[in-house]
Image 1 (cartoon, helix red, strand yellow):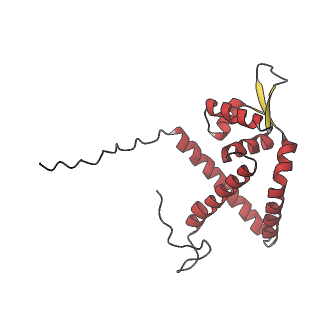
Image 2 (cartoon, helix red, strand yellow):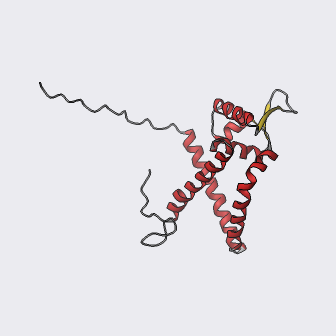
Image 3 (cartoon, rainbow, N blue to C red):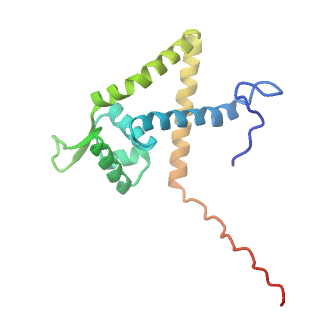
Length: 181
């Protein structure tokens, strides 16, 4: 359930630092979503298309079905997504050398890296600079935390996507004015 934040500045409130759950659950996640939207737009893509490229770049060639499962999309949605990526020159469909009945989706990693380097190099430099201020033990704690938050997010995403959505109550039209004439 959405709730209105009690503060404007994500770093502080009138009563002190913000609640960690609020900061992570809303402020951080919003910043991540907006960053991915902006980086995708730079390529002329949607955030989902950009994440598909990221999955393919990290995991290597996948079948459409495997990519659909990874992204939580339907096979039909993946077909359209891959068509758009192929048209933009970021991916292509190639026969699987081990099983010619299968088609793999392969990302053009060099082209993608060339396009995204101006965005991600300064971003990674800023992250490295931030992390340099932490001890090895603190970085281990941060890594542990992020790893487990990522697992929790994946688990809850799987739960949400496998459970049927509740049917919203039917909205009724407002009654018309029935004053006697």
